[in-house]
Length: 285
Ligand code: GUN
Image 1 (tube, rainbow, N blue to C red):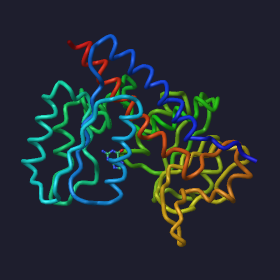
Image 2: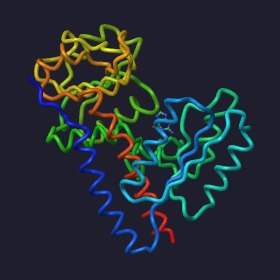
Image 3: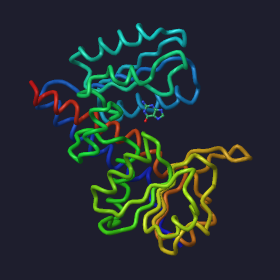
Image 4: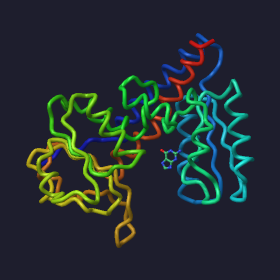
């Protein structure tokens, strides 16, 4: 029987701490941390995420603004908005919701966001800092996972960590954070030979491939810590992770559920990055 890592409870705890820190910040500086969220087009899932980001800002006491742009928005118009937000003193963090409509150049937009306001940590400058291990902004999902591990009292030093998935948003930065925490890290992907055997070696297994209930009991070592980053719909339309929870839970020592595991932490870490950005703006003067 595994201990269930309650991402909702840990997320609520961290948000309460951030709300306290924000009160203090306002008292000392006379203004609030500010986040601008930009969304282009009408993808319903993206609109739900963006709404949740606005609500999280309200919860921790930030100033926030949401810029909803039509799907026909041009590259020039979007870049002009990012320029304005870069120069806006009320705004400390800028998030452009991905994916963008196909006619827009995502990479160019992410490069436009000032690295000082890049609370997603997607700008190559911040990605580079993550590699070096000298970072101010942490990529939100991997950072949320590190908090879940820490607050569950899970030791990383010397542990075999297997990350499955090599995306720029999750897999690659996750591997770096585990490495900085002294884990021995293996990154697997769709071309990995005998994936199950590699996964069975893991003391800490991070599943981030986006395939519903792909990881079964045969891929998990007895007593492993299993972190499920997946958010998929199964054949019945139910929200499930990358891990077959019912099969794996009896074998694991700790496991994150879906929903209610990693998901709630991601936006919470965005709030933390925004507060960090505001503190750094004060330091720069
Ligand atoms: N779309 C899905 N996840 C994310 C994220 O973490 N940041 C941004 N900007 N867009 C996303």
